[in-house]
Every structure is written in structure tokens, then in C-alpha cells.
Image (cartoon, rainbow, N blue to C red; front, side):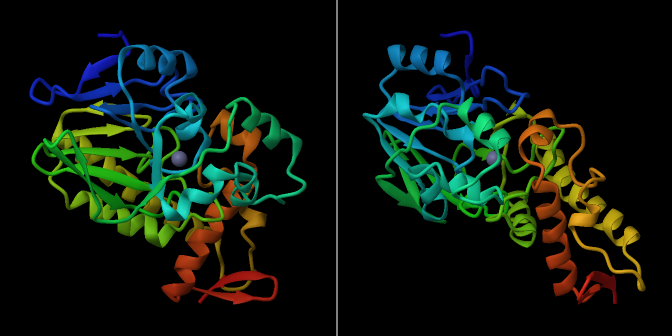
Length: 301
Ligand SMILES: [Zn+2]
């Protein structure tokens, strides 16, 4: 077995965890190979080439459109690609990513162009879209159920094999970052629902795209609870900063690292995402009637 590959458990011999080359740095992500199916292609070019020499990969499932999850797709041109219909457009036309990160389609900032260039992205044709509840059969032995978990992106999907109690949870939570909903297509309300949906599953073994392979059910549960706790903490911090008199906009609060702290990749490439994430909390507070919109921002109700 190649050094970056391990079986997820002694029983699940066909479920191969592929550790991304720089798992924690967000330039690569972990993947899973089950028989002829690869979930996500961002493990690194070197690793993917080694995988291709040793395994027959025919189908690729992309959990969502983010660059670190799809970057190796061009090496798998002979495979058929699947993703949720909501995430199809930036995978098929990478320039759509600029818009989804909150920038102009025609005139994105140089730093974002440079950042995305590092991934060597190529447009990929999605031959099949997947939706919540779909079953992807593997080798007649396993049934991977698609769990649509919007929030991080609007087409973000997790995958669950009920008999094995195995789940691929992608970016449902991320070490050092926490739940991230800084894209135009992200939704905080959806994110919380998605987390609850995943928490209700009986999961014994999980692969997270950046936490790795986790084989302790309590640890998996803790990571999910942690995501909800982080969101709640961000709610509380924002509400403590708002007042009944002076109005604040998301932009005015966006330079305080209230959402995500000390992430190199984030500071360099995604200066808008903090503002977008705060805006998602404001959307939630408006719905809960905790705040009101004024001409110059938001105040507490
Ligand atoms: Zn992501």
C-alpha cells in the first residue's frame, strides 16, 4: 500500500483513506477511494499520479466546488464526474469562483487570481448531478447515500454508508477555521440545519477533508458539536458588539477577525469572506427579530 493510503478499518477493506499532502494547510485535502470511485481530487498532483498508476478510477464525486477539493480533476479526464447541481457551475467554469468569493467576474483582484493559479484548475464537465437521498452503489456491496449539506457552499454534500456506519464529511467543520460560510452561495441557517442532520446519523468512522480519518464515534460527535458551539460563540460576539443606538454594517466589523482567526490562506486571498460571514449572521438575527435594519446598518431590536 502506498504510504499516504490506509484502510479506514480492518473490516472496510475497500474504503481507502487518502491523506492529502498538506492536510492541514488547506492547499490540499483528504480523499477517499472506494473501488472505482474517488471522492474529491485535491490530495496533490504527485499523490494522484501514484494513485492512477495503482488503481482503476472510473468515477469521481466532488463534495463541493472549492479549489482545494477539485484541483486534481484534470488528471482524471477519463472518469465521469458527479457533484450536486448547485455546485456544478464553478466546477465547469472556474471563473465563476471569483463571483462566488464575492468579487467581480470580469475584474477579480490580482491576489485572488494568483491564489487560484496555484491550484492549476481546469474546467471539468460534470456528467451526472447528485441530490439528497441518491444512492451511489459501489461494487454491489456498498450503498453510499448522498446527504446534501448546504451551508459551506450551496451544493456541499456528505456521503453515508449506513451498514458500515461510515461517513465522508468533507468540510462540515475545519480545524483552525471552524465552520466557514464566507461565499456568496454560503448560508449560515442552512449550515446549522446541515450540522444537525449529520449529528443525527449513527457514524462510527468518518473522513473529514482536513481533520483526517477519525475512528472514534465520540470524537466525530465532538467535532460536530464543536462546529455548532463555534457558530453560537460568533453569534454572541456579534450581538455583544451591536447596540440599540449606533448602527453597524458587516463591513465595519470585518477587520476584527471575529469569524476566522490567523489563517494565512484566508488573509491573503479572501479578505471579503469575513464581511460575508458577518452578513450571514445578520440575516439570521433579522429572521430571529434580534436586530433591525436601518439606513446606515443594523441595530439591536
Ligand atoms: Zn470547502
